Image (cartoon, rainbow, N blue to C red; front, side, top):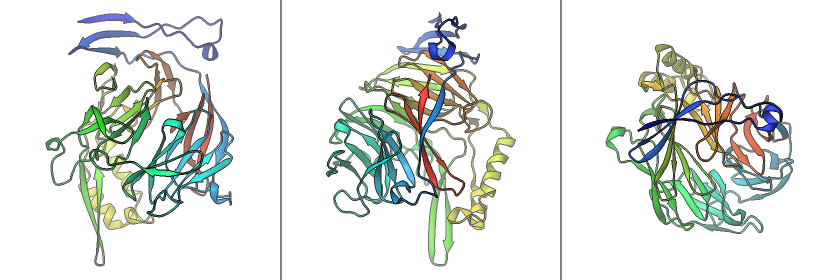
Length: 401
């Protein structure tokens, strides 16, 4: 059954002005597929959101001598008061800053003992602002008390150490295993990887989603008697993206087409959101541009800059058939769903669509300069960039609507 439904998109006062009448809305089509409600949006332009990000602080950079402002980050998180937490893989620690960018304190140090870190890959906040750190170097999740810095270690999790986690409603969410396929077997022949809702001790409660492993291939590089093996994913293959709403529902994207699934904490698909156009076919120009990007790494420091490594990479490159539409996915502090969209250029966010938690399209941001890495606090966002010396910086911003 397909029923046309007009979703009225009233302009926010800050974006359009109090006396400005609402623009025409998109015509959404609502139907039900296998008992799941589906909202389908056309490719026509939606209400343009005149939102902006005002910079509040820039943390770090090559010209800052204080070691507490020098880092190489793999993860960010923040609390409701506006404090920012940076997972520093270079310093083997978690750095905490207030909303003005002032250093507050650090958690952890290098090592394998209690409370020590080797490779803090991801950081999230749990109950009472407890700090949850995925430490791939020590193959464990370490949890710090935000006040006194004391620590404990999470018990084992299903499928080995997760690389991406989230917490809400007194529960722990994680992907139970690698979403990359084993090179020795075809990706479509390997078991699906579950996205799990677990108790705070790591014990699994529900499987929310099953993820198909992403195809990859192996590159080998020999230097003297040393053999290094690196796994490279198929170019343009869809990537699993998921984000957590405050009530424990999860937004999932795992296909090349513009499709979002809102999943309840027990694993029931509550609603599906689609928007046209479908994923476009990969062209030879797309493939050549990807090859050129690999060629440009030749001569760079490290393994990937080795001419022999680059040659193997080019020889073994494989490509998906279509370009994925969704490039980024996040949920902000007001439970709005932000979707980065590729319009023409592969893997580039050329538009941001914003939905409320029920899947109603609020509008779009066209030609954005960036997609925020993190939303936190009442109205804050952060992104990671580099200065002119390639030193990492975290930019703290306020979202102005």
